[in-house]
Image (cartoon, rainbow, N blue to C red; front, top):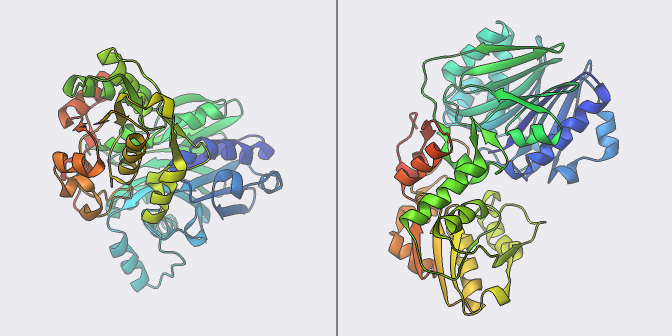
Length: 449
C-alpha cells in the first residue's frame, strides 16, 4: 500500500518538517521503512528501516532543507523488506535529478524490467518503483513532462499513485483507473500532495481536491497546474481502502471513510442481527463498523479488548510468523466485561484468520458465554495484484472454506459477513460513486493479470 507525500514550501527550513509530520499521519499505510528527499540545488536524501520516529531525528531534518520534498512510508508488496527498496528512489540524468515515491503495484513489472535489462539498464533493487523511475527518466530525456506521463501510462499495467520531483518541480500523478488515493492540500506557505486527507489536516492545511484518475498536478515556483494525461477509462478505486486501509478521519473521492464504515456496520446489523448483551470491536479497524452495528440494533457498545498502541498493524507485517506473534502482543482482554456475557464482536475483514482465531480463543478462555463474529465486508476470496499483500488463494481462508467451516475453525458461536450488495449500498449511502475494484471479493479483475 504505502503512503506518499510531496511538499512545496516557500520556507526551506520548514519543508522537511512538513514532510515528517505528514508521514506520521500516514504511518498506518506502511511501517517497514521511511524516507524524505529534499531538493535545494542538489538532492539530499535520508531513508531508513523502521517507523518514522525511528528513522528521523531533529538533526537529520535540519540537514534536509529546500523548497521541494518527496517522502514515503513503505509496506512491501513488490520487493523484499530491506533498505535498498526504501523510497524515495533517486535517478540522476540529463533532465535533472528525479526523486520518486510510489503507492501501488505494477502487474507487468517483471516484463518491463526484463525489457529494460535487455537494453542495458542496471537495477539496484527488486522493487517495481525502480522500473517506473527508470522509465520516467528515459522519457524525460526526449519529451516534455506531459508527453512523458502519457508514454508512461501506455506501458504501465497496475496501480500507481506517484509523487515525484524533477529538480525543484513537484508532481503528483494518479493512474488512469484511480486504484489508489491521491489528494492536494494548500498550506499557508505552500502545497501538499499526499495519499490521504488526514495528512493535510496534520500540517494545518486546507483540502483542495482529490487528484482525478489519469490526472497530474504540477507545482513549479509556487504556481500550480493540472493536466489530464489520459481519458476514457472507468475508475476502479480499491474497495479495501474504505474497508480497512485508510484512516477513518480521511475523506477519499468525496467519501468520509468514517461514515462509510458506520454505514457498513448498520447494513451488517440489518443482514445479520443477533441477540447479545453488547457489541464490541476488534480494535482499531473494527470500531467504526461496530458502532454502526450497535446503533442499528439499539444495543450497548462496550470494549472487551484493549489494544497496545505501540504495536503496528498486524495485517501489513511482511511475514506470517511476525503476524502471529504480534497478535499476542497487540490486544488484551478486559475480563470483567467478558465473563458470562454474550458478545457481538465486529471486525472489518478476515484475510488469513490469524488474528480472529487468536482473539476468539482469548475471549472464550476469559469466560465469554457466546461470541458472535460479524464482519463488515464480504469474504475475501481472491488475491490482490494491485498493492495489498494477499498474493495467493492458499493464504485466504475464505477462498478455501465455506462460512460454516470458517466459523468452526475460528471458534465463533456464529459468523456472518456483510454481503457484496450490502457493502455497495453502504458506500452509496456514504456518498460513493460505485466505481470500485472488487477483485478480492469477486475474482473479477479490472485489468488483465
